[in-house]
Amino acid sequence: MFLENALRFGPRVHVMDPDPQAPCAALAERFVTGNLSDVDAVVRFAADADVVGIEIEQVSAAALSELKRRGKRVIPDPDVLRTIQDKGLQKQFYQDHGIPTAPFALVNHAEEVKAHPELLPAFLKTRTGGYDGKGVMAVTSATTTGLFDGPCVLEQQVEIALELAVIVVRGSDGNETTYDPVEMVFDPALNLVDHLQAPARIDAATAKEARALAMRVAEAFAAPGIYAVEMFLDKQGRLLVNETAPRAHNSGHHTIEACASSQFDQLLRIYHGWPLGDTRLRGLAAMVNLVGTGGTGTPQLNGLDEVLALPGTFPHLYGKAETRTGRKMGHVTVLADDQRALDEALRTVRTHCRVVPADDTI
Image (cartoon, rainbow, N blue to C red; front, side, top):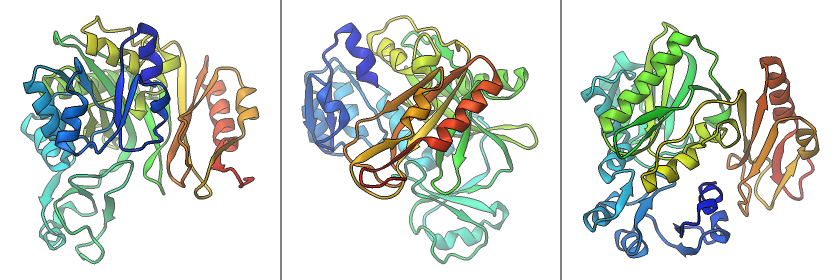
């Protein structure tokens, strides 16, 4: 999606990805298959680059530091990425900067959970490597049977009213802008976003506070880039930062159609040092993630006729060669003038749209 926007301006975009069938391979001027954790491989790949960016957090921060030392413009800053890659360091960062977050403890072994009964019920999160709901488990008692055994964050469960996200765009000159807070609804089984709505259905004061809190996070990191700040609105009306992604994010995919300047356009502007774009919503918007179901195989999208019959719907298929149950395969953005029309379109998309193996007729 970044490439589709960037190529309008003619930059030379090179991509490194561990998957030789990565969908972006057909669009990149140069595509290299490689291990993103391999310091030497990443440095060699980007040796001739002017600007280096990431699409996922699991990239060698040491390699990015070396590229920065060589004079490359690296976004996000390697120090920012290093903090965010480790959920323990990230939680401590919030605490050190006075940013509200759920109570937590850092544990190195499952047995240490017993020392923190005051945090239960809680979530146990692996400090590194977790992604799209992986590396997270609920802990309801002090028993350690079946728990992750290694460095983790034990985080007290919060009584959540809503889960929100605010994307902050921070330029090299320190100027910042934000998109409207979005409301995220999670799939309870897969623990990833099922759909979102923009703007979030919260009052103006809460929306203002959410924007301000997200900007505090970006200002604390003090480096240019895109910061997708996920937060909880608890049942007492408090906003608590959950985690931050220093990149274009699933919570901002709707901006491709819903805003004059999408999150991908903003990223290109940051890379080039251009003025930041217009983040205002053109109307009500929603996004539904298309997640694989029914097993593994060649992807087939069912329900496309029903979706395309609706006004203001925009399917995006990511071009992945294989669908798997729980794998993000695309999304559908919905635009509408009023809440009723948006709800009806959302219901249609969620009812009919399925990505399944090609031999499945679900």
